[in-house]
Each structure stands twice: as C-alpha cells, then as structure tokens.
Image (cartoon, rainbow, N blue to C red; front, top):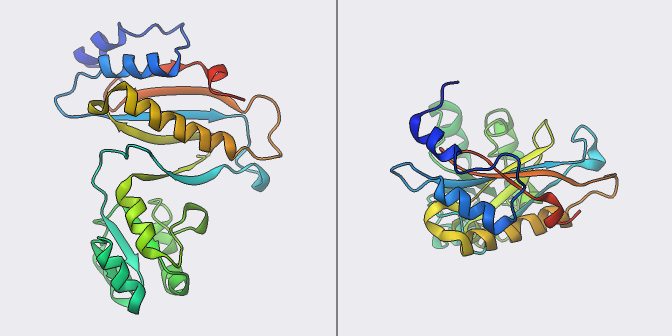
Length: 231
C-alpha cells in the first residue's frame, strides 16, 4: 500500500529499532499526528496467550480516567423503571420488542454501545447474528448486561471501553485523542494496561505482554517497551 507524503514525513520521526518508554512513545505519537482532524490515539497489545482456549481468554472493560474524547450513543433494552432510568441517564435509544424489530427490518445501527437488563436477554438473543459481528452484543463480562442500566449508560458516556483478544491474540483499543496531551493519554494507558495485566489468565505461560504499539489514526506505529509495562 502506497503511503502518503505526511505519513512518510511522520515515519522519519520514529526510530523503528527503539523500544520507547510509554510517555515518550505517546509524545512521539502526538508529534507524528499530521491530519487536519483530532486523531484518535490507539493501542495494540500482543499477548502471550492462545485465544482459542477458553482458559486463556482476556476480556473486560474499564472506564478510562480521561474518557476517549468520543461522544458515545447508547441503546438500551429495558422496560418499566429500568427503561425510565436509562432515559434519565442519557441513553439515546431505549426500548424492547420495538428496537428488535427496527434493527432486524431497518438495519438500524446508529449507536456505539448496546446495554441490556438481564430479563431482556431472551429477546436480545435474537439479534446475536447481527450484533455479534459488530461487537455490539451485550455481555456480562463487559458490564453491558446489568440490573443497573443507568450506571452502565453513565459509564459508557464517561469513556468506558471494552478490551478483548482478536483471533491473532492482539487487543486493539482507543486511548483518547491527540489533543489530550501526553499526561492524560499516559493516565489512560496506565489504567488500561493495569486492567489487562490484572486479567492475566492463570493458564498463561511465559511472557504475557509480548509487544505493545501506540499510533494515531493516520500516523505510524511507535513501539513501547513491554518490559516497562510489567509481565
């Protein structure tokens, strides 16, 4: 793939042979961000586990201390008092059967997070095939199946992110925006990495954090020294 002029210029600022300390890596990402919009800073963490085994799964959710910088649209499956609480907490879409029909018949996906009360999961299960591939299916481990739907809505709005392994044993997550600056991005980085390390499966052997790269949406990757993160 042909790289643009801005990317090539940015790449010159990155020492490919170097493993950066987290703060220095994030500072470099900010310096290499050349786009005209406020780019998202992303993290990619390769773990020494095998996601094909159930006892080596790494999955969870965390509210980043400084949020993600993104406005999040929330859809909630709930009825009665829980529906009213979800609306009061700021959910954009709240409903039950009506939302299932809308998603199935109108291809309605104008939201970023889906939350469900436990008594709604029989209904929501019908949408597994469409919500699952988009990473939107509510899940107790991610805190998106819960009795306290109002708190889940508030957390989502505050910058809660879900981390989970892909098929290649890598976790991909947003850390915030370039405009946050190094300090806030590093706070988010430390919070997320702390959660990932805490979630280390007992079955994991050898080096847990194999590699870690941070990058802006349009910028080059910067390698972080995994040894400085903890294994």
